[in-house]
Length: 192
Image (cartoon, rainbow, N blue to C red):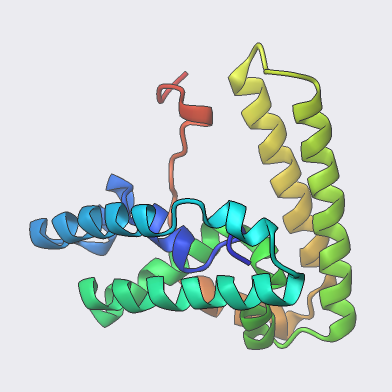
């Protein structure tokens, strides 16, 4: 799905200086990425509202069309190896939750039963996140960020338990070399 990752996640990541450095983007590519981001942001403004009015099947089709368009545009800006590395980084950022996406589940060779269990794990994680946010605005953004990280780690641990050794190996192939991306918790300054 749209919010879970894929091309939109890749576009978001491309605006991160660490990712740009890892991909060795040229000045021209950085300029094109910036323009592409603005162009697509404008084009898809209101997409969330549009998706809410669709049936699940229609929503999935619309999201797929958006993702295909974004991927096509990214392929015009990036070299093949840059796009491949960007896919790897996006999967690392998304974590094992990416296995809920049909195309990733297929590449790893998940069974229907594994996919069903992954959806259950993600539903439970969403409930945990909702409970955090229902407590109101966090007084301590760092603490909230740590709690969200704990939920992410729990998701990866639970999904990891479902995978066979062969599937774990395939996942490692998909994510490539580890990449450490520093996130600022909820927009706060680094190093706090």
